[in-house]
Amino acid sequence: MPDWSVSLHDGIHSLTAEAWNACAGSDNPFVSHAFLSALEDSGSVSRRTGWMPRHVSLHAPNGTLAAVCPAYLKGHSWGEYVFDQGWARAFEAAGGQYYPKLQVAVPFTPAPGPRLLVHPDAPPEAAAVLADALRQICGDTGLSSAHVTFCQEQESALMAKRGWLHRLGLQYHWHNRGYQSFEDFLEALSSRKRKVLRRERRDANAAGLTFHTLRGNDITKPEWDAFYRFYQNTVDRKWGSAYLTPAFFPLLSERLGERVVLMVARNGQETVAAALNLLGKDTLYGRNWGCTGNWPFLHFELCYYRAIDFAIAHGLKRVEAGAQGEHKIQRGYVPSLTHSAHWIENPSFRASVANFLEHERLAMTEEAQALGQLSPYRQDNAAE
Image 1 (cartoon, one colour):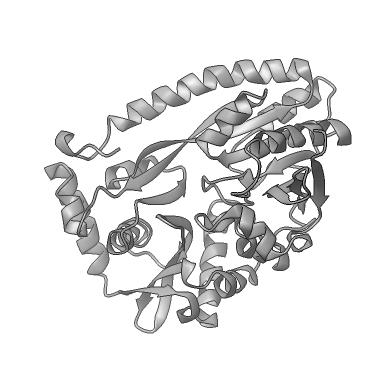
Image 2 (image 1 turned 180 degrees about the vertical axis):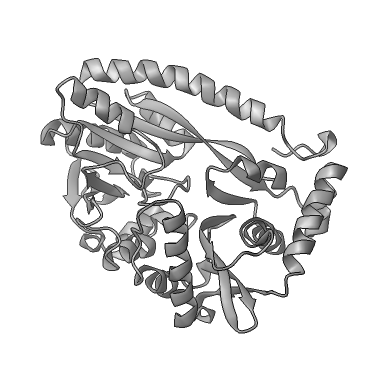
């Protein structure tokens, strides 16, 4: 890469918020300096959790900042939602060393979005140069691989042309087809599915709870304290690890302001459940949720139906409700393919992974098509 300059940074504060956000833009909150710095400053991203920042910056031949990407040196594959542990076991069984690896991602966040963050005034080849730079970092530092997860489709296509391996995943997203109200959305569903959703909402709202949507400064410390307890409860039930620290959520609220949307349920004065969302330019992103007690259909009400209400009221195009969950289909969230790009340094191992991914992509595409047949929408109102 003659005349281009690549640097690695061991923390997001090595770059100013102004410089980083000039490349990241304002559409997706997860790649903002505010979100990434909240992860680091709260201790959620650290050596303790195995996510060591190695953010990449790229300067054009004229010396200006052309692109950045959020990158981490990792000695494990936890908290990524794109599973490569099988690759690690196979490579190490053959005598290789898979870890450490370079992960270009938003930690603990399976939300699709841009990963090669190119300044709008950068030379047109900047994204390709950055993709090549990530490969070069592997070769120069002895890393086994680099992984760009939950990137945009056009990014994975560009990288595939430059030797990266393309991987598909599956999520469930709700699409706003110009609905004026939740009832308008229900009318797009088949009669049987419409009755199910109405019953679930009716039962959730008949439990004596009150529901509130809080944003920015309206979210108080007691609300965040309660939410962290819910977060821990959810992690414990799933036998997971609580990577996010208690300091993370208040920092997030402080730095992202009105883009933080917390939907809470209260039993009298006590908050008994909450769902955390982040607001993008045209998308509401569901992130974490939790509750205490046993409340009928409360998860569906807080995480799915009230998210749809919010999206319709604010003219948003989509609600992305996170990873996994075929049960989302019956509630209007349709199968949507996600994209990742992977560079494997060892040529023989790269060929093996490429063969695996070729078959996996076919299976994933077929699965998405099959799940699409479960759509609750009337045929004359099929969702995109």
